[in-house]
Length: 204
Image (cartoon, rainbow, N blue to C red; front, side, top):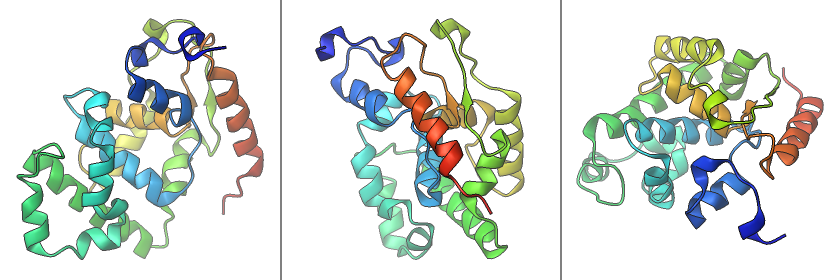
């Protein structure tokens, strides 16, 4: 089957970079805390924009923000941080850039309390991916009770740009829910990955 014949979720069709992200990353379960932190921050950068805009700046974000290592972020010299505000390789929004550093501080406060960030997030789906079976994009929600609860908890801990819609997009992307449409060629592989993840992950 050629790429042209593959059935995909309609939101990614027409752009090779978008399709590659959809085919290889979106909906695959992630339990690495730093990877989850990076994705949550990037979803916050998307606010008001298309995900494709962020995707095209993906490498620059990871390079300029030290691969979203919270310790490295907070150790950045002021001059390096100030330079971000005028760097065209990323979204030049002071509020969004500052939010990444605010989120890094919140992340480290959780860690200092002995709270694993991955477990903090996955508890909102009871540590188990939700496997949906939507047949049309119109059926897919933009937020759920779980994403509302996640947003509320993150805001309470001091995180920024983490509203219910952003949190649900994040949950879809990191495999907390399978929102590939049932006729998408990624639906079954993601379902299998989620079932394997559920059986193999050992939460504390």
